Image 1 (tube, rainbow, N blue to C red):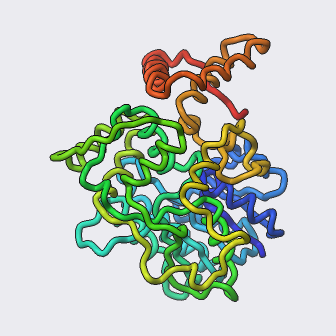
Image 2: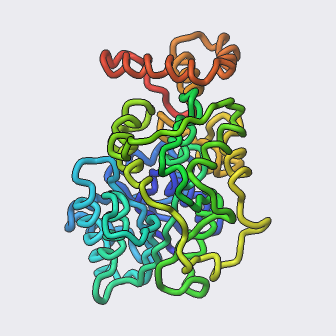
Amino acid sequence: MRILVTGASGYVGSRLVTALLDAGHEVTVAGRNPAKFGGYGWIDRVAAVQLDAADADATAAAVAAAGPIDVLYYLVHGIGEPGFRDADNAAATHVAEAAKAAGLKRIVYLGGFVPDDDALSEHLASRAEVADALHVDGGPEVVWLGAAMIIGAGSTSFEMLRYTGDRFVLMPMPKWARHPMDPISIRDVLHYLLAAADPKQVPVGSYDICGPTTTTYGDLMRTYARLAGNRRARVQVRGIDTAALSRLTAVALPIPGGLAADLVASLDYPMTASAHRLGDVVSDPDGGLVGIEDAIARSLEPVEPKPVDRLTDPHHLADTDAEWAGGDALRIQRLAAMVTPSFAHPALGLISAVPKPVAGAVRAGLDALDAISGMLPKPGPS
């Protein structure tokens, strides 16, 4: 099929483009700055168009320029940015109207679970509102897939788990740590996304996607610590609400503050899949769904970041994933490689032997220095 992927430079989007190409589809990628796609390994195998979803006219022009399209993947979000909720709703409306005008038949949207609660976080409420905005009278049919935490190196939610497990000697266990959740492997997310493009496999509607096992936030943190080789004591935390926790997270973790805070605000809610699951419609991938331990173990494999289309496993870090992802030792190694002669680079692997809380403190100091002086080199793709 002829596929248009919006949000192709993101974590899921960049891996989805690879999977679509491997499946034989013809792919066009869309973004506000098409030049940014030049660093992605698949760039020579795709077409690219400039699409600024905040501008209705520009969006219509971009979708028209993409030519005849069978399916549009909508992976755009502004979570972490000021006013993202209204901006995301407007962007979804612009894309849906442009898709209608161009005669597109199907939009596949990856959002999140929406708990049955009258007072949702901004993040969760926005995901549901975007799905509504993509439905326009006479427009394309919409398949909405909802997911909770996506496990894979480079995924924001997984990186938050990584840095919490690595940096804190005492593992905090607030009340929400007992909430149930259904995480999913990035490999299985891609499996379901590919299936959702095919009307013969997936009828129009909303579906939740999840892995084979339900866990809790607390058990997930314990599982990560064990697989990462971290010996951590657990401490019950009482009297701290998620608003306070989101502010602490923004300071303590090397993830953009607004992004981390918006995601943490959603921890007040159980994140379990509804009864309407895509797994009841689509067959499991070969070998079955990836379990939690296997997904985390794959994400922690010490593999040098590669171009996203050359990853041996989509759980591995790509060289185009966010520069803050991958762990503190990797960040320090990248910075050190920029200021040391090439003959010394093999020795930089010894940094991984530094205790993780110490590496976290060193990296935090380097990041603070960079924020103040702007003098540290910027690691590029590996």
